[in-house]
Structures are given as structure tokens and as C-alpha cells.
Amino acid sequence: MGGRAGGQGLSGRPAGPGTDDGPELRTERLVLRRWRPSHLDPLAEMHADPEVMATLSAAPFLREESDRFARHQELGFEHFGHSMWAVELASGELIGAAGLTAVIFEAPFTPAVDVGWRLARHHWGHGYATEAARAAVGYGFDVLGLDEIVAFTSVGNGRSEAVMLRLGMTRDRAGDFDHPNVAVGDPLRPHILYRLRRP
Ligand SMILES: CC(C)(COP(=O)(O)OP(=O)(O)OC[C@H]1O[C@@H](n2cnc3c(N)ncnc32)[C@H](O)[C@@H]1OP(=O)(O)O)[C@@H](O)C(=O)NCCC(=O)NCCS
Image (cartoon, rainbow, N blue to C red; front, side, top):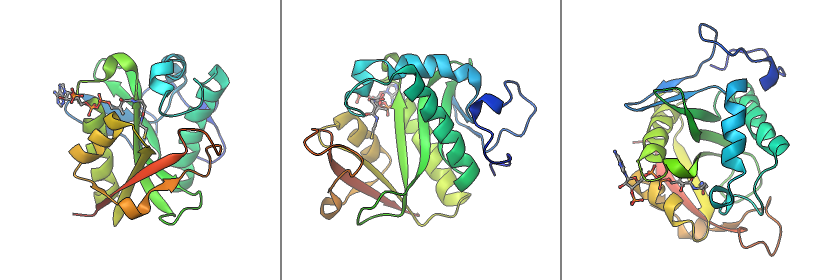
């Protein structure tokens, strides 16, 4: 998995097919693939949208923050063999990111693997986040051999919580936590926790 020499970064990644681009997942309507330079413009557009970012960050991402996000995902694939994939429609259009992140901050439930998602606003309401997340969760259990996958979101992010429920995840009320990487006093700091055990 991963299969790429470490430390290369996104700029060193090939733009075309026929290379070692795994792990890559296909669903009925989506392709989840490794990050490519061609993804960076639409990713930055999504990250500049205040509506998308309202539940993720104190402010929309600047271009360099968005590019760093993609590079960070690639580092995840290289170090852990999993990360958030670029999510494309069959047409090749990038619609967002979804996948499995190694949670390394300190909380009672960590270390853990988190399933997460974010989509461009005009792609909400089509079931794409749930479809991508189902594939990611299947990969986590069947290929990575995980025993449990968690998901968390800021309090009040009903759309994200609805995805967790559609995945069959269970709220762990005792696991609710203040996200250590979010500033004290930021309304996005209190988080809820969901868990999913291997079937
Ligand atoms: C969280 C987020 C990804 C959820 O997106 P979403 O589109 O609501 O979720 P899904 O992709 O699962 O789509 C579900 C909706 O599609 C509808 N839908 C339409 N066609 C569908 C189809 N063919 N199959 C399944 N559902 C379909 C469902 O009925 C549901 O509609 P509803 O919202 O009216 O109940 C999105 O709101 C987002 O990117 N938010 C900002 C970033 C964020 O907060 N990320 C999470 C951080 S933890």
C-alpha cells in the first residue's frame, strides 16, 4: 500500500495514470484516489467556501493551507498506508475528500483511525459522502484489518452526524471531548464521538 518512496510531497507525484497510485477505491459513482497536482485548484475552491469550512475551521483556508492539506494526506498514505483520498466523480471532477486518518492527538479514545469527509457545497445532498465513507470503512476493516473506526465532529454539525448514523456508527456520549487542536473558546472545540466496531 502506499508504495511510494517517502518524503516526495504532492509536487513530485505523477499527473497521469499507469503509475503506482494505490490504494485506490471505486464505488458505484465515485473514485477515491491519491492526490494529484490537478486536484489542487478545485480543492482550494472548496476550502475557500465559508459554508463548507464553517464546521471545520475558524476561517476558510488560504491557498497554501489547502495545498498543505493535500500534502498532509499524501504523507498519511506514505506513513500509515491510509489517509483521506481525493474523491472524484466518474467524469474525473474532484468533489472533495474522504477517508481514514490516523488520529495522533491525545484524547481518551486515541490512538484511533477516524473516518472523515468534506465535499464541495454543490455536491451535498447526493449521498456522495456516505458512499465514499462506506468504501473507506470497508477498506479499513477488510484490507487494513482495523478492529474499530471512529468519527468525530464539532457539536451541531448535523450533516456530518447524519453520515455517521447512515454508516451505522454509534454515539459514545462518554467519549465527547474538546478537540485539543482547536483554540479554547472557539465554538468548534467541543466534539462528539461515534464508534464503529468491525462487523
Ligand atoms: C458533512 C458533509 C460531507 C455531508 O454531505 P451530505 O451531502 O449531506 O451527505 P451525503 O453525501 O451522505 O448525502 C446525504 C443526502 O443526499 C441525499 N441523496 C440524494 N441522492 C442520493 C443517493 N442516490 N443516495 C444516497 N443519498 C442520496 C440523501 O437523501 C441525503 O439528503 P438529506 O441531506 O436531505 O437528508 C457535507 O455537509 C460537508 O462537506 N460539510 C462541510 C465539511 C464537514 O463538516 N465535514 C465533516 C467534518 S467532521
